[in-house]
Amino acid sequence: MSQINRLPGGQIDRSQSLDFTFDGKAYQGHAGDTLASALLANGVRLMGRSFKYHRPRGVLTAGSEEPNALVELRDGARKEPNTRATTAELFGGLSANSQNKIGSLRFDLMAINDRFANFLTAGFYYKTFMWPAAFWEKLYEPIIRKAAGLGSISLQGDPDAYDRGFLHCDLLIIGAGPAGLAAALTAGRAGAQVILADEDFTLGGRLNSERLTLGDQSGADWAAQTVAELASLPNVRIMARTTVLGAFDHGIFGALERVSDHLPQPAPGKPRQVLWRIYTKGSLLCAGATERPIAFENNDRPGIMLAGAMRSYANRWAVTPAQRVAVFTNNDDGHRTAADLHAKGVSIAAVIDVRPDAPLSGDYEVIAGSQVINSRGRLGLKSIEVALPGGGKRQLACGALGVAGGWNPNVHLTSHHRGRPEWL
Image (cartoon, rainbow, N blue to C red):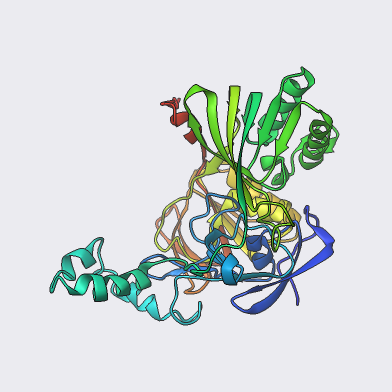
């Protein structure tokens, strides 16, 4: 089994090979992979179908903001639908399946809906299937839900145990990126009771996705060193695989810890998940930011993804989504993606920058003052169409396109208490 898109480097453990299946086909990844990174490494771009029109869908992001790559994990009573492949931690024997299809993923019979998209407008079913009224519950609704639904549950009793608990601290830090780690280290050294929570299984945030350095060491090495020191402090509790899901009155936060989701089944006496109620005197939100895409016609094909996610796959998981990649950007961040991929030996078709004064590169072509206006490739990206500043058009062959539209800070937990960001 050849991982055709695996690159050198990364933070995966190549000494541990993990066998898994996707739609019944066997693949291989490594410890430290997510399901999405392992599939991309094996050349799999098509991972699902869209909710209504059943258009082909591939991975867009590298984290919990993923809207496309939703899969079913495991079999039998432990079957888990609607799970993001970008957050599913790979383990040996994992069985994953695509969902929201009739037939195979490549030849989904419901893809006919896309041909009639102009007639299947929002809410058309509630206006069309009204008569006779008795048919709605027994005939119309089951058919519509099967056509437009997502995953399915097993209907068997859940064999796993779940728990809940209470925690108290002086400072709750949400997010273990560079800001969260630095804050936890400062508070922990000062003797405060600290809880550091992060949804990822590897702490460090974007430090694991970039080629940044701090002093004489890489950002990823600094993060690992900081986590090791924090783990040695008795007044600091590190909670990886933990999502803080709500901020409530009187300094109360809700958090879900996925204790055993990364295992085939929980260890004896251990729960699968724990719901925590955290009481804290103060909190610090260090949740980072989410990259924005750029809209253009047919911007949803498998292979089109966020440029920052491309850097994550390349630098953290040593994966490229294709051997020939283009980047579409309106800021300098897209150029960082092209430089990182080029440094790992990936062919850069071009960087398309909407700015007339875009920085040029001696390693690959930069098309300044241009924009991507269309894409081609039914089940996966094959080429893009670029509008040139002089009014002409150009076709570029590529297997993946990274899109960089800037970043938005993740301030949702602050907004739970009516916090309002100020845009300058």
